[in-house]
Amino acid sequence: MTINSRKAINFEKLENIAIIGNGGRENALAWAIQKSDYVKNIFIIPGNGGSSNFKKCKGLDLDYSDTSKLIDKLIELNINFIIIGPEIPLANGLADVLRKKDFCVFGPGSDGAKLESSKSWAKNFMKDGNIPTADFWKVSSIEDATPIINSNNSLVVKADGLASGKGVFIPENRNETLEITELILNGKFGNAGNIVVLEERLKGPEVSVFALCDGKNYVVLPTAQDHKRLEEGDKGLNTGGMGAYSPTPLISQNDLKEICEKIIDPTIKGLIKKKIDYRGVLYFGLMITESGAKVIEYNCRFGDPECQTIMPLMDKNFVNLLYECAIGNLHKNEQIIVNNMVSGCVIASSNGYPQDYEVGYKIQLENSKDKNLQVFHSGTIINESKELVTNGGRVLSIVCQNKDFDTAFEKAYEYLDKVKFKGISYRKDIGHQVRESYKGVRN
Ligand code: AMP
Ligand code: GLY
Image (cartoon, rainbow, N blue to C red; front, top):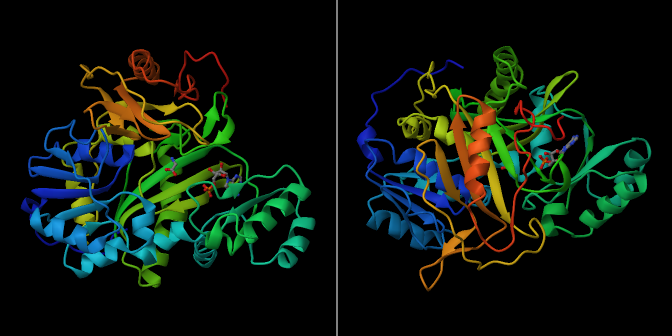
């Protein structure tokens, strides 16, 4: 997209930065951003057990949903730039509140976050913009849903609103489709299920594409593929993501050009048409079908663990791009500087995740001595005895870069072998799609 001309940018404003969130995504963003010569201090709010592991970075135990307290703290710390990581504060309008107070923010307002916070809104948006996606029906009663379910063979059922990644179902048959639709409409996800989206079921591998957007122009990050299922061979329950690799050979340079033309450009145009000034990352969850790439979902944030996987490929000026987006001044031909390596990420989780699991177990790990191997923290915390313990379902992301995926994953797994906490679980086949040496299940 080539719309605006450029003003001079004062990167000195990057001295003190706040990152909102407590996951692996925010830990990886902090790590990537502290490389900048402009950056002096990064406060991760509230952060996790790994927030202080990197130069210039510190966790700040503060409830960011208390916006007046948050604003007081940001003023006290002389924060000039804020990056909002998770979808819930974005959907709740935290970026709008901060912008009204003249803070410079990377992250869309609640209007743009609707692409993620309302699936029916996003589907209508795609329909209006002629953006390739699955056919869909929006229903708000079982009476409306029944004839659609009876006349379509395989449907996907989605709660309209945010449901912590648990609101999508792929039923085996019509009875199951009816049952889950009714459960959602009857309040399984509270108000998030007042509307249900029934979708045509697509087939094909899924990939993640991220565009940093300043409201008019955008730049695309290296592509990635996530592993959503819990078990090896891509089986078992859906999770937030058990590992990822980047870039993915499933998208060639030509494919990416086509994705830009058919999906990303019309998305930006659609936002502009709706007068939505989207300054943040647009995450396109795509399925590569026989008839080309189609949008499965939009998210208004970086993917987790895709973010952990991609950040080590960025150069030290990555934060400049985020800032340029936030001030609405991305260069029309902005080039993203990436190193020429590939990156693989494996998530170590608590036994039981994504369902019930226990926390509070002591974590033993060594500092990485390899500059191409990072340990990003997600569900960790420093307890009262100053020990690092588990505090969530996904605990650590082990990320490694190399010239080839085989070596990158070999090193990540070698490191992971030495990480210890009670109930540690991880998939051994992450990146199987791109590991020449992998002898297990491939798809
Ligand atoms: P979502 O939260 O919308 O990304 O959906 C979660 C997962 O459900 C996706 O990552 C896909 O694996 C699957 N899914 C969602 N929509 C569809 C669809 N229309 N066809 C096939 N699978 C889908
Ligand atoms: N890794 C998938 C997501 O962040 O939604």
